[in-house]
Length: 93
Image 1 (cartoon, rainbow, N blue to C red):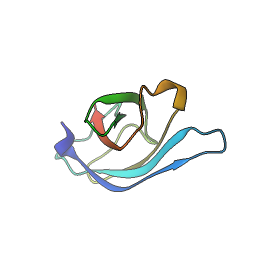
Image 2 (image 1 turned 135 degrees about the vertical axis):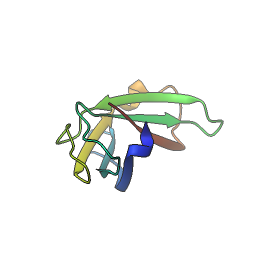
Image 3 (image 1 turned 45 degrees about the horizontal axis):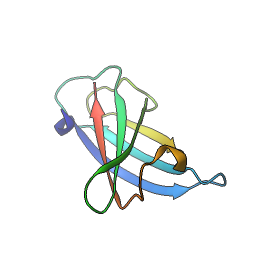
Image 4 (image 1 turned 90 degrees about the horizontal axis):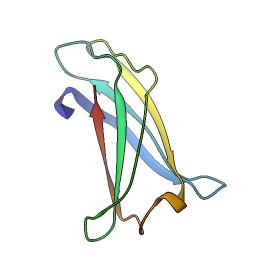
């Protein structure tokens, strides 16, 4: 599933309201166009427990072969069940 994507860039920041923000760009490196792509952001604590998950649609959400897309996801600190130490990005389509 995720082998169809190459993450070209990703960065996490905190906005003025304290929300965790993930920005990035990915490319469809698969052999087929993909429709209705969703980005899923999994946040983990130091013991590798999931402490938060959020998802959203990149722009554009339908990608031709070789096409790139950008994404921006946010999660409130109150939606986390611990302190985030690392994260993973996955793609659903």
